[in-house]
Length: 392
Ligand SMILES: Cc1ncc(COP(=O)(O)O)c(C=O)c1O
Picture 1: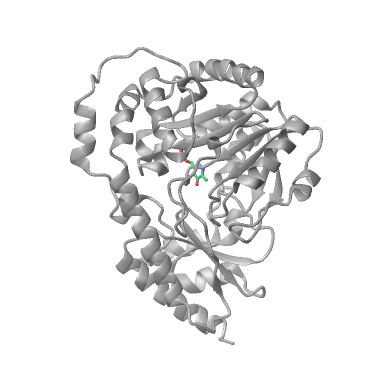
Picture 2 (picture 1 turned 135 degrees about the vertical axis):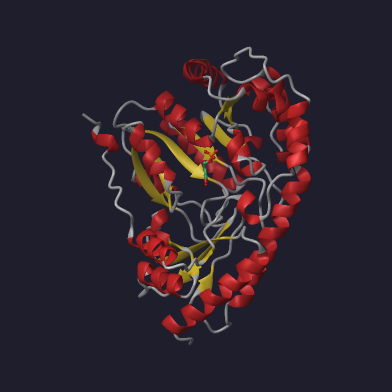
Protein backbone atom coordinates (compact mmCIF):
# COMPACT_ATOMS: atom_id res chain seq x y z
CA UNK A 1 0.00 0.00 0.00
CA UNK A 2 2.81 2.44 0.89
CA UNK A 3 5.58 3.96 -1.20
CA UNK A 4 9.01 2.37 -1.07
CA UNK A 5 10.58 5.75 -0.39
CA UNK A 6 8.80 6.09 2.97
CA UNK A 7 9.82 2.62 4.18
CA UNK A 8 12.37 4.07 6.57
CA UNK A 9 13.88 2.08 9.41
CA UNK A 10 12.24 3.70 12.43
CA UNK A 11 13.70 1.50 15.16
CA UNK A 12 15.17 3.83 17.83
CA UNK A 13 18.95 3.95 17.64
CA UNK A 14 21.06 2.73 20.58
CA UNK A 15 21.44 6.24 21.96
CA UNK A 16 17.75 7.13 22.03
CA UNK A 17 16.95 3.71 23.52
CA UNK A 18 19.53 4.27 26.30
CA UNK A 19 18.28 7.81 26.88
CA UNK A 20 14.73 6.56 27.24
CA UNK A 21 15.87 3.95 29.73
CA UNK A 22 17.77 6.54 31.80
CA UNK A 23 14.76 8.85 31.78
CA UNK A 24 12.48 6.00 32.90
CA UNK A 25 14.86 5.48 35.83
CA UNK A 26 14.46 9.15 36.72
CA UNK A 27 17.86 10.37 35.46
CA UNK A 28 17.96 13.05 32.83
CA UNK A 29 21.39 13.90 31.42
CA UNK A 30 22.34 17.51 30.68
CA UNK A 31 21.21 17.98 27.10
CA UNK A 32 23.96 19.53 25.00
CA UNK A 33 22.14 18.72 21.76
CA UNK A 34 19.32 21.24 22.11
CA UNK A 35 19.22 23.85 19.34
CA UNK A 36 15.89 25.50 20.10
CA UNK A 37 16.69 29.02 21.34
CA UNK A 38 13.40 29.10 23.27
CA UNK A 39 14.51 26.03 25.27
CA UNK A 40 17.83 27.69 26.05
CA UNK A 41 16.54 30.87 27.68
CA UNK A 42 16.83 32.74 24.37
CA UNK A 43 13.12 33.02 23.51
CA UNK A 44 12.01 36.14 21.69
CA UNK A 45 10.24 38.65 23.90
CA UNK A 46 6.55 37.60 24.07
CA UNK A 47 5.28 41.15 24.53
CA UNK A 48 7.18 42.27 21.43
CA UNK A 49 5.81 39.37 19.35
CA UNK A 50 2.27 40.18 20.51
CA UNK A 51 2.74 43.84 19.63
CA UNK A 52 4.08 42.92 16.18
CA UNK A 53 0.96 40.86 15.46
CA UNK A 54 -1.42 43.33 17.10
CA UNK A 55 -0.49 46.01 14.55
CA UNK A 56 -1.55 43.75 11.60
CA UNK A 57 -5.01 43.01 10.19
CA UNK A 58 -5.25 39.30 11.05
CA UNK A 59 -8.29 38.28 9.00
CA UNK A 60 -7.31 39.70 5.61
CA UNK A 61 -6.09 37.33 2.86
CA UNK A 62 -4.97 38.12 -0.66
CA UNK A 63 -2.81 35.24 -1.88
CA UNK A 64 0.43 36.14 -3.65
CA UNK A 65 2.23 32.87 -4.53
CA UNK A 66 5.80 34.19 -4.26
CA UNK A 67 4.96 36.04 -1.04
CA UNK A 68 3.38 39.38 -0.19
CA UNK A 69 5.02 42.24 -2.01
CA UNK A 70 5.47 44.31 1.21
CA UNK A 71 7.16 41.36 2.92
CA UNK A 72 9.54 40.85 0.00
CA UNK A 73 10.29 44.58 -0.13
CA UNK A 74 11.12 44.59 3.59
CA UNK A 75 13.31 41.53 3.10
CA UNK A 76 15.18 43.07 0.14
CA UNK A 77 15.91 46.17 2.26
CA UNK A 78 17.05 44.07 5.23
CA UNK A 79 19.38 41.90 3.11
CA UNK A 80 21.45 44.99 2.21
CA UNK A 81 22.80 44.65 5.81
CA UNK A 82 24.42 41.41 4.61
CA UNK A 83 25.75 43.01 1.42
CA UNK A 84 23.02 41.64 -0.90
CA UNK A 85 21.30 44.14 -3.18
CA UNK A 86 18.28 42.34 -4.63
CA UNK A 87 14.97 43.26 -6.18
CA UNK A 88 11.93 42.08 -4.18
CA UNK A 89 11.01 40.09 -7.30
CA UNK A 90 14.10 37.92 -6.77
CA UNK A 91 12.77 36.69 -3.42
CA UNK A 92 10.45 33.73 -2.92
CA UNK A 93 8.81 33.08 0.44
CA UNK A 94 8.15 29.55 1.71
CA UNK A 95 7.12 28.09 5.06
CA UNK A 96 10.62 26.83 5.85
CA UNK A 97 13.99 26.28 4.21
CA UNK A 98 13.17 22.57 4.23
CA UNK A 99 10.17 23.35 2.06
CA UNK A 100 12.36 25.54 -0.15
CA UNK A 101 14.70 22.57 -0.72
CA UNK A 102 11.72 20.45 -1.82
CA UNK A 103 10.58 23.17 -4.20
CA UNK A 104 14.09 23.47 -5.66
CA UNK A 105 14.40 19.71 -6.10
CA UNK A 106 11.02 19.78 -7.91
CA UNK A 107 12.18 22.74 -10.02
CA UNK A 108 15.56 21.29 -11.00
CA UNK A 109 15.33 17.50 -10.90
CA UNK A 110 13.40 14.66 -12.42
CA UNK A 111 13.28 11.29 -10.66
CA UNK A 112 16.80 9.83 -10.15
CA UNK A 113 18.63 13.02 -11.06
CA UNK A 114 21.44 13.78 -8.66
CA UNK A 115 22.45 16.70 -6.47
CA UNK A 116 25.91 17.15 -4.97
CA UNK A 117 25.91 17.76 -1.23
CA UNK A 118 28.68 18.42 1.28
CA UNK A 119 29.81 15.79 3.77
CA UNK A 120 29.43 16.30 6.63
CA UNK A 121 26.02 17.89 6.39
CA UNK A 122 22.84 18.14 8.35
CA UNK A 123 20.68 15.02 8.66
CA UNK A 124 17.44 16.29 7.08
CA UNK A 125 18.87 16.51 3.55
CA UNK A 126 18.74 12.76 2.75
CA UNK A 127 15.06 12.64 3.78
CA UNK A 128 14.19 15.70 1.69
CA UNK A 129 16.00 14.19 -1.30
CA UNK A 130 14.36 10.81 -0.89
CA UNK A 131 10.90 12.38 -0.74
CA UNK A 132 11.69 14.05 -4.08
CA UNK A 133 13.26 10.88 -5.58
CA UNK A 134 16.55 12.74 -5.93
CA UNK A 135 19.90 11.03 -5.42
CA UNK A 136 22.45 12.79 -3.21
CA UNK A 137 26.17 12.49 -4.01
CA UNK A 138 28.51 13.57 -1.23
CA UNK A 139 31.70 15.59 -1.67
CA UNK A 140 34.03 16.29 1.27
CA UNK A 141 34.16 19.68 2.99
CA UNK A 142 37.51 20.98 4.23
CA UNK A 143 38.14 20.41 7.96
CA UNK A 144 39.61 23.90 8.28
CA UNK A 145 36.58 26.23 8.67
CA UNK A 146 38.17 28.67 6.22
CA UNK A 147 39.69 25.94 4.04
CA UNK A 148 39.31 25.95 0.27
CA UNK A 149 36.83 23.64 -1.47
CA UNK A 150 38.29 20.78 -3.46
CA UNK A 151 36.46 21.36 -6.75
CA UNK A 152 38.16 18.37 -8.41
CA UNK A 153 36.79 16.16 -5.61
CA UNK A 154 33.38 17.73 -6.14
CA UNK A 155 33.43 17.17 -9.90
CA UNK A 156 34.59 13.61 -9.37
CA UNK A 157 31.24 12.60 -7.84
CA UNK A 158 29.16 14.28 -10.58
CA UNK A 159 27.90 12.82 -13.84
CA UNK A 160 25.33 13.63 -16.51
CA UNK A 161 22.49 13.14 -13.97
CA UNK A 162 23.78 16.01 -11.82
CA UNK A 163 21.56 19.09 -11.67
CA UNK A 164 22.77 21.12 -8.71
CA UNK A 165 25.35 21.63 -5.97
CA UNK A 166 24.26 22.34 -2.39
CA UNK A 167 26.46 24.13 0.12
CA UNK A 168 25.62 25.05 3.69
CA UNK A 169 27.48 28.16 4.84
CA UNK A 170 28.20 28.45 7.70
CA UNK A 171 28.10 24.68 7.57
CA UNK A 172 26.08 22.61 10.00
CA UNK A 173 27.73 21.20 12.10
CA UNK A 174 31.33 22.23 11.35
CA UNK A 175 31.02 26.00 10.87
CA UNK A 176 32.94 25.89 7.57
CA UNK A 177 32.38 29.08 5.57
CA UNK A 178 32.04 29.52 1.81
CA UNK A 179 34.57 32.30 1.24
CA UNK A 180 34.25 34.71 -1.68
CA UNK A 181 37.11 33.26 -3.82
CA UNK A 182 35.67 29.75 -3.45
CA UNK A 183 32.21 30.97 -4.30
CA UNK A 184 33.57 32.62 -7.45
CA UNK A 185 35.32 29.38 -8.54
CA UNK A 186 32.25 27.30 -7.76
CA UNK A 187 29.96 29.77 -9.56
CA UNK A 188 32.14 29.51 -12.68
CA UNK A 189 32.15 25.69 -12.48
CA UNK A 190 28.35 25.52 -12.07
CA UNK A 191 27.85 27.93 -14.98
CA UNK A 192 30.17 25.82 -17.17
CA UNK A 193 28.53 22.50 -16.24
CA UNK A 194 24.94 23.84 -16.37
CA UNK A 195 24.36 23.11 -12.67
CA UNK A 196 22.37 25.26 -10.27
CA UNK A 197 24.04 26.35 -7.02
CA UNK A 198 22.00 26.18 -3.80
CA UNK A 199 23.53 27.91 -0.79
CA UNK A 200 21.80 27.25 2.53
CA UNK A 201 22.83 30.14 4.77
CA UNK A 202 20.39 29.72 7.65
CA UNK A 203 23.26 30.46 10.08
CA UNK A 204 24.64 33.47 8.18
CA UNK A 205 23.72 35.89 10.98
CA UNK A 206 26.01 34.02 13.39
CA UNK A 207 29.59 34.31 12.14
CA UNK A 208 32.39 33.78 14.65
CA UNK A 209 35.95 35.03 15.12
CA UNK A 210 34.80 38.63 14.61
CA UNK A 211 33.92 38.14 10.95
CA UNK A 212 31.10 40.29 9.54
CA UNK A 213 27.91 38.52 8.46
CA UNK A 214 27.85 38.46 4.64
CA UNK A 215 25.31 36.77 2.39
CA UNK A 216 26.23 34.50 -0.52
CA UNK A 217 23.69 36.60 -2.46
CA UNK A 218 26.07 39.59 -2.14
CA UNK A 219 27.97 38.82 -5.34
CA UNK A 220 26.60 38.66 -8.88
CA UNK A 221 26.18 35.07 -10.09
CA UNK A 222 27.04 33.52 -13.46
CA UNK A 223 25.21 30.31 -12.55
CA UNK A 224 21.56 30.01 -11.59
CA UNK A 225 21.86 30.42 -7.81
CA UNK A 226 19.45 30.02 -4.90
CA UNK A 227 20.31 31.37 -1.45
CA UNK A 228 18.15 30.06 1.41
CA UNK A 229 17.46 31.67 4.77
CA UNK A 230 14.60 31.91 7.25
CA UNK A 231 13.13 33.08 10.54
CA UNK A 232 13.79 29.66 12.04
CA UNK A 233 17.44 30.51 12.74
CA UNK A 234 17.82 34.21 11.88
CA UNK A 235 15.23 35.19 14.53
CA UNK A 236 14.91 31.93 16.45
CA UNK A 237 11.26 31.62 15.37
CA UNK A 238 10.88 28.19 13.70
CA UNK A 239 7.19 28.18 14.64
CA UNK A 240 6.46 31.27 12.55
CA UNK A 241 7.03 29.20 9.40
CA UNK A 242 8.58 31.80 7.14
CA UNK A 243 11.72 31.38 5.06
CA UNK A 244 13.00 32.87 1.84
CA UNK A 245 14.97 31.98 -1.26
CA UNK A 246 16.93 34.62 -3.18
CA UNK A 247 17.18 33.75 -6.87
CA UNK A 248 20.24 35.03 -8.76
CA UNK A 249 21.99 34.41 -12.06
CA UNK A 250 21.68 35.28 -15.72
CA UNK A 251 18.30 36.89 -16.47
CA UNK A 252 16.77 34.24 -18.77
CA UNK A 253 17.37 31.29 -16.41
CA UNK A 254 16.61 33.36 -13.32
CA UNK A 255 13.28 34.62 -14.71
CA UNK A 256 12.30 31.15 -15.93
CA UNK A 257 13.14 29.75 -12.47
CA UNK A 258 11.02 32.43 -10.78
CA UNK A 259 8.08 31.82 -13.13
CA UNK A 260 8.20 28.07 -12.42
CA UNK A 261 8.64 28.64 -8.68
CA UNK A 262 5.57 30.85 -8.72
CA UNK A 263 3.52 27.87 -9.93
CA UNK A 264 5.09 25.53 -7.38
CA UNK A 265 4.37 28.06 -4.61
CA UNK A 266 0.85 28.60 -5.91
CA UNK A 267 0.04 24.91 -5.48
CA UNK A 268 0.90 25.20 -1.78
CA UNK A 269 0.35 28.85 -0.69
CA UNK A 270 1.98 27.67 2.52
CA UNK A 271 3.17 30.84 4.25
CA UNK A 272 0.73 32.24 6.81
CA UNK A 273 -0.47 35.73 5.91
CA UNK A 274 -0.01 37.21 9.43
CA UNK A 275 3.65 36.11 9.49
CA UNK A 276 4.23 37.77 6.11
CA UNK A 277 2.55 40.97 7.24
CA UNK A 278 4.61 41.02 10.43
CA UNK A 279 7.91 40.40 8.64
CA UNK A 280 8.90 44.06 8.28
CA UNK A 281 8.54 44.69 12.05
CA UNK A 282 10.21 41.40 12.93
CA UNK A 283 13.26 42.21 10.81
CA UNK A 284 13.45 45.73 12.21
CA UNK A 285 13.57 44.44 15.78
CA UNK A 286 15.94 41.50 15.38
CA UNK A 287 19.36 43.01 16.19
CA UNK A 288 19.19 42.84 20.00
CA UNK A 289 18.21 39.15 20.01
CA UNK A 290 20.97 38.25 17.54
CA UNK A 291 23.50 40.06 19.73
CA UNK A 292 22.33 38.00 22.74
CA UNK A 293 22.71 34.78 20.77
CA UNK A 294 26.14 35.86 19.52
CA UNK A 295 27.29 36.47 23.11
CA UNK A 296 25.94 33.08 24.18
CA UNK A 297 27.79 31.29 21.37
CA UNK A 298 31.06 33.06 22.23
CA UNK A 299 30.69 32.43 25.95
CA UNK A 300 29.95 28.72 25.53
CA UNK A 301 32.73 28.31 22.94
CA UNK A 302 35.14 29.74 25.55
CA UNK A 303 33.75 27.45 28.29
CA UNK A 304 34.29 24.45 26.01
CA UNK A 305 37.85 25.51 25.20
CA UNK A 306 38.58 26.06 28.91
CA UNK A 307 37.21 22.61 29.79
CA UNK A 308 39.77 20.92 27.53
CA UNK A 309 43.05 20.09 29.32
CA UNK A 310 46.04 21.36 27.32
CA UNK A 311 47.42 17.82 26.91
CA UNK A 312 44.11 16.13 26.04
CA UNK A 313 44.10 13.82 23.02
CA UNK A 314 40.72 15.19 21.87
CA UNK A 315 40.35 18.58 20.24
CA UNK A 316 37.84 21.36 19.88
CA UNK A 317 37.65 22.13 16.16
CA UNK A 318 37.83 25.77 15.07
CA UNK A 319 34.62 27.16 13.58
CA UNK A 320 33.73 30.20 11.50
CA UNK A 321 30.04 30.30 12.39
CA UNK A 322 26.82 28.57 13.38
CA UNK A 323 25.35 27.15 16.58
CA UNK A 324 27.36 23.94 17.03
CA UNK A 325 30.80 22.85 18.18
CA UNK A 326 32.64 19.81 16.86
CA UNK A 327 35.10 17.75 18.92
CA UNK A 328 37.67 15.54 17.24
CA UNK A 329 38.20 12.21 19.02
CA UNK A 330 41.18 9.89 18.60
CA UNK A 331 40.76 7.81 15.44
CA UNK A 332 40.43 4.61 17.49
CA UNK A 333 37.31 5.92 19.28
CA UNK A 334 33.90 4.34 18.79
CA UNK A 335 31.50 7.31 18.64
CA UNK A 336 28.53 5.37 19.97
CA UNK A 337 30.52 3.89 22.87
CA UNK A 338 31.72 7.39 23.77
CA UNK A 339 28.19 8.84 23.60
CA UNK A 340 26.87 5.99 25.77
CA UNK A 341 29.64 6.57 28.34
CA UNK A 342 28.77 10.28 28.31
CA UNK A 343 25.09 9.51 28.89
CA UNK A 344 26.10 7.39 31.91
CA UNK A 345 28.12 10.39 33.12
CA UNK A 346 25.03 12.60 32.74
CA UNK A 347 25.65 14.49 29.50
CA UNK A 348 24.04 14.08 26.10
CA UNK A 349 25.86 14.93 22.86
CA UNK A 350 25.57 13.65 19.27
CA UNK A 351 27.95 11.29 17.45
CA UNK A 352 29.53 12.62 14.26
CA UNK A 353 28.04 9.88 12.09
CA UNK A 354 24.60 11.50 12.47
CA UNK A 355 26.10 14.10 10.09
CA UNK A 356 27.89 11.74 7.72
CA UNK A 357 31.47 12.79 8.30
CA UNK A 358 33.49 11.08 5.56
CA UNK A 359 36.37 10.27 7.94
CA UNK A 360 37.50 10.68 11.56
CA UNK A 361 35.65 10.31 14.85
CA UNK A 362 33.65 13.25 16.14
CA UNK A 363 31.20 14.55 18.73
CA UNK A 364 28.72 17.35 18.11
CA UNK A 365 27.48 19.81 20.77
CA UNK A 366 25.06 22.71 20.65
CA UNK A 367 26.55 26.00 21.84
CA UNK A 368 23.13 27.40 22.81
CA UNK A 369 22.37 25.91 26.28
CA UNK A 370 22.41 28.28 29.26
CA UNK A 371 26.07 28.75 30.32
CA UNK A 372 25.66 27.24 33.82
CA UNK A 373 24.17 24.06 32.30
CA UNK A 374 26.72 24.08 29.47
CA UNK A 375 29.68 24.52 31.87
CA UNK A 376 28.54 21.59 34.00
CA UNK A 377 27.95 19.51 30.84
CA UNK A 378 31.38 20.16 29.34
CA UNK A 379 32.99 19.51 32.74
CA UNK A 380 31.37 16.04 32.79
CA UNK A 381 32.33 15.57 29.14
CA UNK A 382 35.95 16.49 29.77
CA UNK A 383 36.23 14.19 32.80
CA UNK A 384 34.72 11.28 30.88
CA UNK A 385 36.93 11.79 27.81
CA UNK A 386 39.94 11.98 30.14
CA UNK A 387 39.01 8.58 31.53
CA UNK A 388 38.36 7.03 28.11
CA UNK A 389 41.38 8.58 26.35
CA UNK A 390 44.31 9.10 28.76
CA UNK A 391 46.23 12.34 28.20
CA UNK A 392 49.49 12.50 26.29
C1 LIG B 1 21.61 23.90 7.73
C2 LIG B 1 20.13 23.87 7.93
N1 LIG B 1 19.31 24.16 6.91
C3 LIG B 1 17.96 24.16 7.05
C4 LIG B 1 17.39 23.83 8.26
C5 LIG B 1 15.90 23.81 8.35
O1 LIG B 1 15.41 25.05 8.71
P1 LIG B 1 13.86 25.37 8.59
O2 LIG B 1 13.34 25.37 9.97
O3 LIG B 1 13.78 26.72 7.94
O4 LIG B 1 13.26 24.32 7.73
C6 LIG B 1 18.20 23.50 9.35
C7 LIG B 1 17.61 23.13 10.63
O5 LIG B 1 18.27 22.83 11.59
C8 LIG B 1 19.60 23.53 9.18
O6 LIG B 1 20.43 23.21 10.18
